[in-house]
Image 1 (cartoon, rainbow, N blue to C red):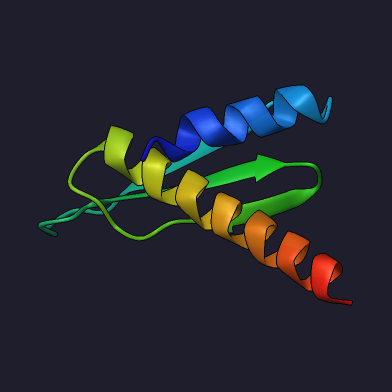
Image 2 (image 1 turned 135 degrees about the vertical axis):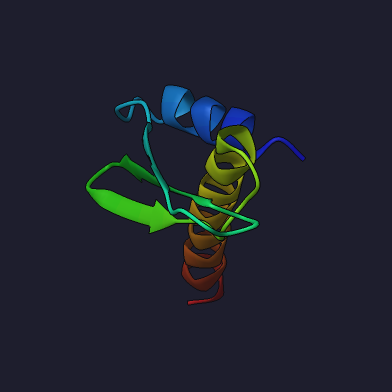
Length: 77
């Protein structure tokens, strides 16, 4: 699943600022990249990855999972 695409579509449909990604690299690790994505006043961080692209996908996935969790709790209230 392409979480970056889902997140981009969500922000477009909700007229929220587009997500901004920040990638950091640590030396000496097999999975040296970690990314965070910020939008709508929140920052989400994904797990470590082998490359920047995968790190950004993991950050977007963390954001999407959080959004889905929030929607689920709203629907069950």
